[in-house]
Amino acid sequence: MRDVPTHQVEAWLYAYPVWQRQLQNLHTQLEELPDGGHRFRTVPSFGKGTVKDVTYERVAKRLEFEEVYIHPLEVHIQILENALLALTSEELRLVKCKYFERMNNALIWESLFISRRAFYRKRAHVLRKLFEALGGEGAPIWSQAWESVERMGHQSAW
Image (spheres, rainbow, N blue to C red):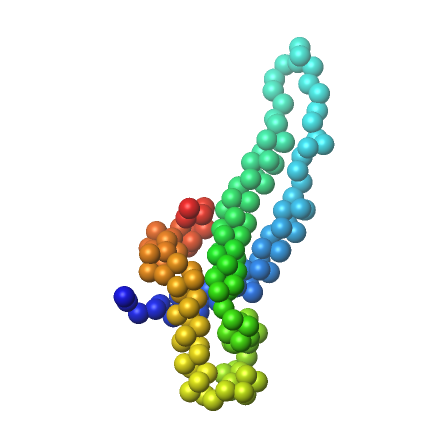
């Protein structure tokens, strides 16, 4: 068994609140995109030339927006939320303080009433537990293909 990639797990944990806000903002923006459903125009059958269908373009743009931006964020958030369910309440408090609220380490171990050494041991244990809950070594989220697709931002790795 190889070492737990703590930097990757921590990167996901640090990004989680940002992903939630991004997803919320993207849903708001999607609601504001014109859907074009009420813009159908009647065209006489004997007319010359063609009428450009803006409805199709708008629907295609909405679908692309959902597929490229919203769906990957939803997948990341769902995967991480499922992994967080594996933690105990004390471990979850540590994760919230350290990664979601970004508190100073000294403040965290004081608020949790643990020693400095116990804090670092517990942190390592939580990261190992989350790594396993995220799928362990064989999970596709740690593969190069997932990372390259994630960087490109085009579509989900599934």
